[in-house]
Length: 562
Image 1 (tube, rainbow, N blue to C red):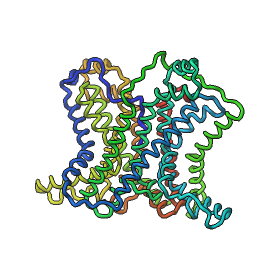
Image 2: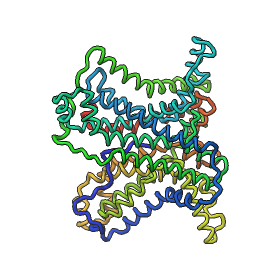
Image 3: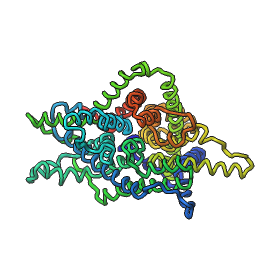
Image 4: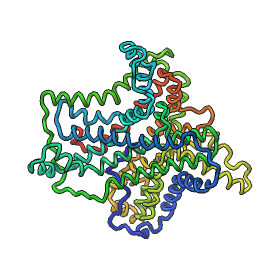
C-alpha cells in the first residue's frame, strides 16, 4: 500500500457546485464514464459481500485452527499498530522538538524503510537469526549447543519486522501534524509549570492524536494485507487462511466466506480509527508559520539521540540493504552478472508489463474521473469517484477472490446468452485477472495524485474554455492535461511501483508458469535460497525508493527538509 497524501482529500465542494449537476448539464457522457469506472472498480468487493451472503448454508471448508488464526490476526494488528505509533510518533517528536547532530538528515532518512517491502526484510532477518544463521551459530559457540535463544519463527518477530517497515507511515503523518502545530499551546503549558513530558502528554499528543490514529490505521491495513512476512515466521492469519483454502480446495464459496472475514477485519480497523478520534475537534490559533523551536541537545544526550536514530535506521534499512548487496555480489551464480541472466530478465519483464498496463489503466481512469468532476461539479460524480477507490482499503486477497467471482458471474451470463465456455480461461489462463485486480487495488493512489493536480486549477479556467466553445475533450487535452502532467506522472510511478511489490494477488491469480520478481523473491526465500532472492529483492527496493522520496517531498513542507 502506498502512503496517501494526507493533504489530499476527496474532491471538495467548490463555490458554485450544485447537487443536481449545475455546470455539468450537457456533459453527461463524462459523468457516465465515471459511473462505469466506479462500477467496474467496486465490482470485486461487492461480489465478495454478495457471494458470502449467498453462501449461507454452504458446507464451508474452514481451514484448520481457524480460531487461532483469528486471534493471531487480532494480536498482530494490535501489536504492529501500537509499536509503530511508539516508534513513528517518538521519532517525529524527537526530530521536531530537539536539535542534535544529523537532525536534518534523519528527518528524511527515517522515511527510507518504507521502500523495503516487509516480506523482503522478513526473509533477511530470518536468514540471519534462524537456527542455522550466523547469530545463533555464534551464540551456540559462546554458550553451548543447548543455550536458550528466542523463538525466531513467532508472532513477536513478525510484529517487530512489520513495525520496522511500516513505522514511516506514522512518522510522516505525526511529523506533518507537529510541523503544523502552533507552539503557543505548548509554550503556555510550560509557562504554567508543566514539565516537558507533562506538556507533551497534555497538550501536544491530544492535538496530534488524529494523525497518529490515521497512521496506525494505515499500518494495520498493511498488516492485514501482508502474506509473505507472516508465512516466513509461521504465523497463520486469516489472510493466509484464504490462500490455503483456495489453493488447497479451489472451493470458491469457502474462500469467499473467509475473504469476507478478512474484509470484516478491514472494516473494524476503519471503525476503530474513527472511534479513536472520538468527537474531539481541535482548532489552532496563530497559524503554523513559526513552528516549534528545537531545543539544542548537548553532550551525551545529543550523541545518544543521534545513536538511537542511527541504530533504528540501521536495523530497518541500511543493514538489510547491505546484506542484499553482499548476497548479490557473492552469489555462486555469478555475482552481479546474474542480473542479466534469462530467468531474471523474464521475471523483470513480467513485472514491468503488468505494472505498466496497470499504471496506464489506473492513470487514464483517474484522469477521466478528475476531468469529469471538474466539468460537472456534481456530488454524484464525486461519490462515484470515491467508490472507484474502495479497493485500496481492501486486502489484496479479497480483491483477488472478488475478481474470480466477477469472472464466474460473467461466465454464467455469457453461457446464458449462448456463448459456450463464457470467458474461457481469462482469469486462470492469462494475466488479465492480475491486471484487473491491480486496477481495482491501485486506483486510489492514482486518483489522489491526479485529483490533487486538478484541484489546483481555478474553476474559472475550465469555465472560460467551455464558454469559448471548446469541447470537453479538447479542454482535457489542451488545458487540463498540460497543467496536471506532473500529477499524472507521479500517479503512474506510484501504481507501477506498487504493482512491482505486490505479492498476494499474483500468488492467487497468476497463470501456470507466470512469475514476477515478487513471486521469485517469495519462492527463493521460502526454500532458504537467500542469495538467489537477493538480486530481484534489490531491484524491488531500489525502484521502491523513487515514490518514497517523491512522497516525502510532497507531504512535508520544505522547511522540514532542512
